[in-house]
Structure formats: structure tokens, C-alpha cells
Image 1 (cartoon, rainbow, N blue to C red):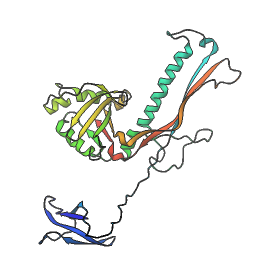
Image 2 (image 1 turned 180 degrees about the vertical axis):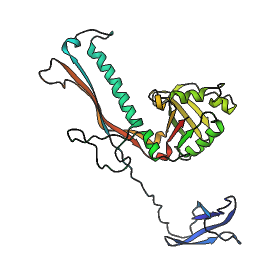
Image 3 (image 1 turned 90 degrees about the vertical axis):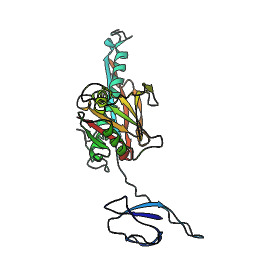
Image 4 (image 1 turned 180 degrees about the horizontal axis):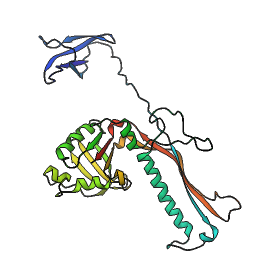
Length: 316
């Protein structure tokens, strides 16, 4: 490998450029300078790899190795029940053909909301470590919960790299670009990330004349691209910055204490993991019950890798 050695006190100064000719052991290498009078290398100098340079007729080098880090998450069982007496089932209420149709529709919405909330805010025993001391219910059966994306970044993110605390009164486009530079140092080939954002934070980005609004603070008039439906099936607005695109998606679940929150995800490193496919189970009532009981069942969790590619913004 060809190496560039830069002065630790002033990284704009190149002390030397050299090529490794031999690896002696884990602590020692032999380097030959590529200039006639290099500056002596000092402790603390920063080293940058330029590329490989192989001697003529030489053999292939040893392959590079990656130290993998194993992180854990769990799938979570969600159940949302629908129950109705046979008499009420035959009634026609709220414009539905019968009450059961109404309850099924409402239960489906509730089921989806509960799943999404767990994927955002879920907490897991032992965090991202291997399963241990699993929580049990009153029947001593294990209860597994998934670690949500917001919780994961709060617990394992790095301040000012992918976990940002933003003061609305002074936050402007220059500060936004600085944050994007840090967040987009690890980015997919399309240079696109999605920001799932609460209503108050979205309003902050949209206010042009109100004191403390993003555009007002920046002294700029910026226009976000018109809403367009993307592959996730939701409407998004695009913020373009020097390092890529941030697609803003309003998420109604980010309300109350989360209204000023924005979760930024890299689509290449996040996924929904299903241990069992979602099913709608019918006729699960007791045999002598004069009525109907049904339920939605899902067994799924969040698959999240390379947490440094995702980000969390909390606006104050």
C-alpha cells in the first residue's frame, strides 16, 4: 500500500509519502519513501491510504479482512382482536352492512398503528445484545419486543454524527448543510435518505416569514419540490443539499412528545423482518359462545444494520 503521512498538528502539511515493502508484525511495517528528502514521521501523524503498488512479477497480496459486529433484535407478536355478539353482528350501524364489518376495518387500522409504533419506539430487553433474561408474562411465557428505530439511535447513535439536537431559533441552512455532511458520510449509491418527520418539525422547515422558521433563519427563499408518491406509497417532499437528497415524509404517529422529531433512514440498511406472515384468524371463539371472535396476528420486527447510516433529529 502507498501511504500519505500528514502532520498531526496541521493536516494540510504532508510529511512524507511512502510504500509499504514488508509487514514485520502486528506493530511494525517497513516503509520506503517516495521522495528524496521526506520529513521525519512523528508520533500521532495521520496516515491516509492512497492505493496499492505491487512489485513487478510479485505474487497476489493478502486479502483485506473486515471485523464484523453482530447485533441482535427480536420479532414481536402483535394480536388485535375483534369480538361481537351474534345479535349485534346482524345489525346495520354506521353505514356498514353489519357491525362486524366496521369492527374488522377499525381493528385493521389499530393493528397497523401498533406495529408502526413498535418499529419506531419499541424497547428491547438487552438492547442490541444477544437474548438474555427475556421478559415473561404471568403464565411464564416469553414476551419478546423489537427495538424500534428511534430508540436504537438514541441508545447507540453518536452525537453530532447521527444524533442531533437542534435549536429552532437559530437553526439555518448553513447548520443544516453541516449536519447533512456528517450524516451522509455513509450513504447509499443513490445518495437518498428518507426523513420521517413530526408535524411541528415539518412546519418548521416550511415557514418562510415566521421568526424562528428555517427559511426565515436562513434569509433564503427555498421551494421544496412538489409532493410526489414514491416507492413507499407515501407523499414526500424533497430537500436537496450538497451531499444528496432528503425525502421528507410526514408521519402522523410522530405527535405529542415526538412532534418535533425527525427519523432519517437509509433504505439500503433497514427492513421489515417477518418471522411469520400476518394473518387474519376467524372463528377463534369458544364453541358455546353466541357470537364471533376473530383477530389479526403478526410476528415481525425491525431489521436495522449500520446504525451510523441512519439519523435522529430532535428540534427544540
